[in-house]
Picture (cartoon, rainbow, N blue to C red):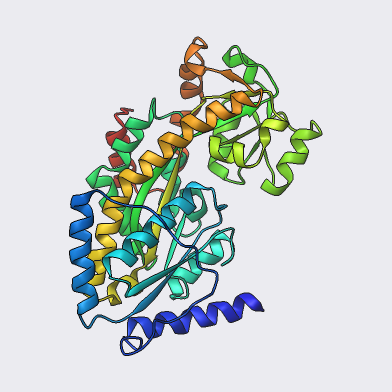
Length: 372
């Protein structure tokens, strides 16, 4: 009941904002649970931003309130991105845009928030591509396994102009405006089984997302993938019901899986790809000046997102080893990456061709440097 009331308030607030009814008085208030952002820019950037802010404040642009939701914790990559968006938009608008950030699924599950964004009850969402596949099935392309050797090749593919243009079209078809695609590094296996060869993976019971693509490619790779609610994972590992799990290092740290797992790897089986999007109707209704501010914010957000991801991958891996986990370097296990790629990649491509636009698939594979 509380969620319905809150969504109703958000809807009215956004409607008022879009049609300028806050321009003659105080800014629309969405919720008291606003998270403040902090940070700074270079002197040159600050001067340019200050000029933009001063111009916005002096104009007759309406006061607006944006709401951004995500399901991550307050120390997650998602939250860092949302705070940076808040900082930039409030700065560039001279305070005329107020941004409220809602973490920990306060605005609902990922699927509920996607619907809220489409309906205009939520301004913006930050989530991973796997959470969007039921709405934009082509996002499943990020689930292609063992395609990339390093994070640089991931970023090259995700920033390819042809690929991005086609993916944006898929979002627009669902009345969503894709604002940013960025990686959070890779998903990596942690386990209680020592891995010295490809054969050691056979039959390993590993928790995976309830995602048909992931279940299929891990089965091809000879593991025993087991879908399980994330909330049940720690206890299952602790009790020995499962041997392994796979997530970005940040999740492994935040969930304290180092307490119930012996080994951490750099399996790098799929990149953790995240997206930030608005409702297309809401974006199109913004004043052109605000559209430019949103676009500028997202353009500046990408290098910051990559910097946060890189620091997190390095620091979190170091932390996990400090907690007693042993690092199994897949680059030092002869033939394991090649065997995994041979077992899983082409089969995954063949399956995904049934649901993913061939033009998008070709653009992504080409950008990744993979030839079939």
